[in-house]
Image (cartoon, rainbow, N blue to C red):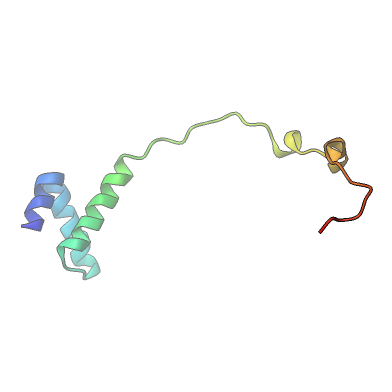
Length: 80
């Protein structure tokens, strides 16, 4: 019944391909077919890589002394 459900979800060609891959690997069982089919389906649905124009790390890095104005150091001792 589970194999038939995979057939209905993924189609004949995809199921036969998954069965061939499973047989080549020596793995038998519907759970293996399901993994092979969902992995193959995920590969076909991947989005293409996007080209994003980001600044280089050197353009974003700052020296630590630029942050000193934001750091408040108490002149007193620690109050623990």
